[in-house]
Image (tube, rainbow, N blue to C red; front, side):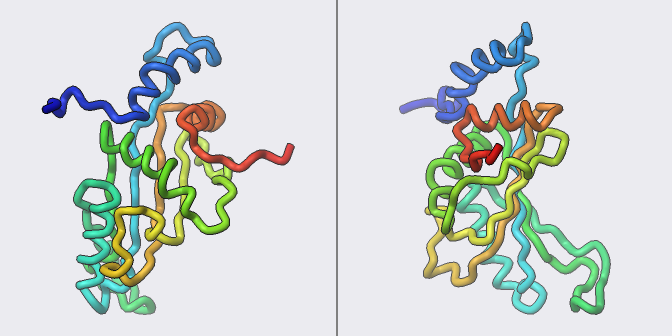
Length: 189
């Protein structure tokens, strides 16, 4: 039986054994500590129907915990908005922040299993970096993840996935994600 401390996700091994050395050569840095790395992955899921039916929140929470392997945090409305029938303190969204091994496991499953199941998928837009080395993805359907049982979860929900890196520039962050095998669209230049 293997000890949990001995286990390393596939992408973490790839980063430590291959990506660090190749990025040191490409970037011209002297220390492996200067090489950018994944910092965290933040996943958000809006649950608008929770205003009328709180069971929808429970179903969405179960789905998100299956996708991420971690229990989501419930986000509540900060202020009341009468046009949206929203009261302060109502549960409206779920949030999960992944770090370390769970982050690498999610990234691996996202790249190899979930992204190819997106309808008419030709790659992610390389222009979705925020200027600080983080990449943002909006997904319309959470059914692309193989962990979701479509008979139990009847409503398709959207997800927002933010991949945060320690890179200061978007070009360096894109190069890092390319090394992980992240499926970007080909540039038309």
